[in-house]
Image (cartoon, helix red, strand yellow):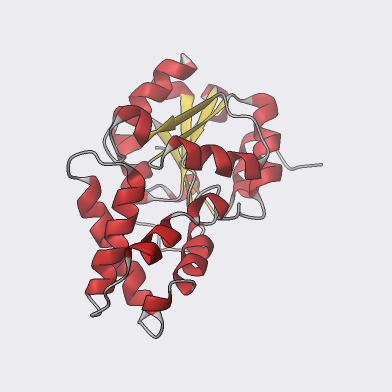
Length: 227
C-alpha cells in the first residue's frame, strides 16, 4: 500500500530495530555473556529469534522472561548452559542499547508536524529508558505489558488508533520488522513504511516505494529535504 503524504495525520513506530539499534545492542550484550564464548554467534542470533517468535505466540508472559528464555534455548542448541545471573545480566542491558545515529534528528523533525506514538513488545520501564535516549516527545507509549499482548497480534494498533483518535487510513506505521509490524499493520488497513536497515531483499508483498534505508529518508519523503 503506497502512502499518500497528504492523508497522513499521525505516525506510529516500532522501537527496537527501527529507532534503537537492536543488532548492535544485542551483539554487544551477547559478547558480555561468558558462557557463550566461542559459540557461533550468527547461528545463536537466528536460533534466538526463532525461539522468541514461538514464545510470543504463546500465553502472555513479561518480555524480559521471553527474552531470557529465547537466549537459553539458543544457547542450549549449541550445548551451552547459561547461569541465571548470565541471563539476567543479558536481559538487563536492553535499556542501554543505543539509538541509530539518524533517529534523534529525524524524530525531532517529524514531531513538529505529526503526533508520534511507539508500539513495542517490551516492558514499559525499558521503553521509557530508551525514549529518554532518543530525546523526543511521543504522545503515547504502548507496550505489551500494558496490553498483555504481543505484536504481530492486532491489539497494539487497535490501542494506538484509540489513543491518537485517528482512523487507520490516516496513520502511517513505521517499522523495521516485516513479521512483527509491517505485514500485521497492513492487514489492519494501516499504511506502512518499512525501514530496511539491514538492506534485505524487498519481498513481493511490499511496495518498493514504501521502503526506506533509514529515518532520514523517510522524513524527507514526508516533509521534504532538511535545510
